[in-house]
Length: 452
Image 1 (cartoon, one colour):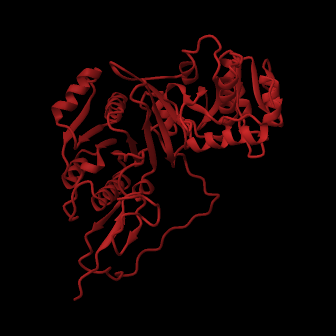
Image 2 (tube, helix red, strand yellow; image 1 turned 90 degrees about the vertical axis):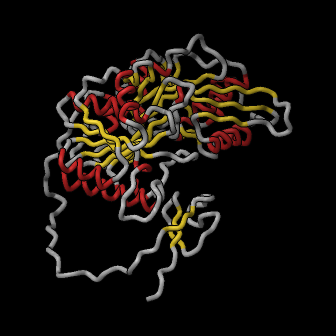
Image 3 (cartoon, one colour; image 1 turned 180 degrees about the vertical axis):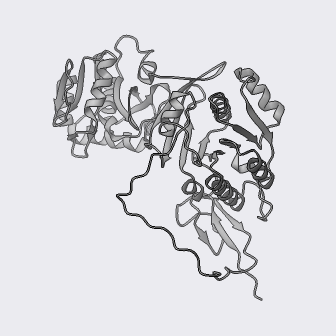
């Protein structure tokens, strides 16, 4: 019998090939291709005829899945309203960002609300987890704790205990004795995730899996793991900031891109029920280079401060430093300002930052970014009571964005009295705010800064 040819798999995208290469042809990642052990035999033919699958039409009505509340409003919001039985949830985040702290607090909160919880740690000893629980004041929570890396033993234990929630920390430490590969390899991670998800569906146990992330910020291992689970959450934040953002990038039981905001304190993570007020709490008198953006995160309107600094550059190539925004978007806005409005940034260093460690991805932030840049360059402060939002096209036109009414309501609630937005927006029934609608970037710079 001929020997099976070796197979090479990309850890970033899961693409397979017959030979090793330094760069993946599918996704372009470097040094991400590893060899997988070949199957000892080919696929076996199907056995006897299977049973017929029951089919229904789209009009069939089913009751929504029951949900268990954790008592942590921010966590319930990101999960779509609470924990769904038999769901599989993948949580990723940078090392030391607070993933284990968050999940231990969540396990304690679920356990106190009547959900039987099992916490399995493959990275820490029981004493270390107990020390964290003691520091967080959770020693009285009825959480069952275990430390193990053998997935066979873990599933046997869960099958005997039948908890409502099981937390696995982390998937990269688990190993399956049926797979001839080291823990953390593509084969082990994929097989372990498959077994855990199948167990969750068969036994009705909700499982939360912790995943390590790569230096690019993606969950390590094959991307197929993210397709297997029902929900993918990222725990984000800067080490130097006390704020942490729990973001849903995939959710089969709720809205994606929903966020929950937490603050890291000496007693663990505390919820932030009004993130807009918190992100803007340190704003003092109006200062050049500061603009308030009314954004939407999932279903929640969130106001954040965008800060810019523009200074003469002593270098031949000016610096462009961006924190919390896409650097490519900054380059586009600078090019539009120079080509369409006639305001150059040549020979100037540009520094852009989103206050509070937030990360803004929606194009609606374009107008606020341009306003902060122009404010810093012209040394003219934007009115303290003004919010801005709108997308900038390559022609310099301002385009309306979605959920204008919700953005304005959140701004009015926090005391803002005027807004700069694209012409043609639909503000709805919002009253009490002065709306300054503009058609293009030239009109905006002329009205706000007397330029253009």
